[in-house]
Image 1 (tube, helix red, strand yellow):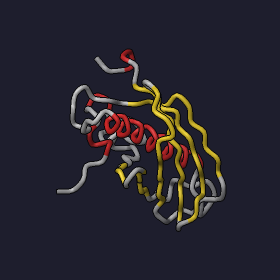
Image 2: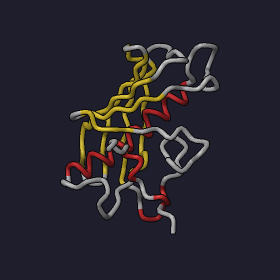
Image 3: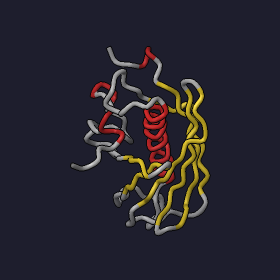
Image 4: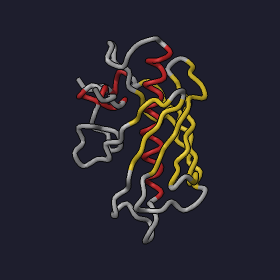
Amino acid sequence: MTQKAFQDYYPNDVSHCYGCGRLNENGLQIKSYWNGDETVCTYTPRSYHTAIPGYVYGGLIASLIDCHGTGTAAAAVYRAEGRTMDTEPPLRFVTASLHVDYLRPTPLGVPLEIRAYVKEIKGRKVIVASTLSANGEVCARGEVVAVQMPEHMKPV
């Protein structure tokens, strides 16, 4: 049996995000998993994810860090509560703040690895720090402040 990604547990009504929604056929559909106390996501950009020839568009990098961060937040809270991700009530997180530092140009044509760890869980807020690497070199660092999705945002 293969391990399910965090995003595979999101309820259908909140699985349409461009970055992480498994039901968005035009989206990135990233997949995030635990790797010890860190989380990991691997994504290979398409040729149209270009900034200048040969390099990845910064908005894609931000999206990967963002969506991997909110997925990590959800998984971390489930873990902190001693719950599996298929238990009720479902937890879904949204971005309150996103900060990305671009350290070096990120090459196209290679898999990108996003690794994250939880810096803090406090109430409905989770702070997640991430790195994005290509060919073993860190190209960007990010921090996501994720908050549990407010009731008014949930589809009816």
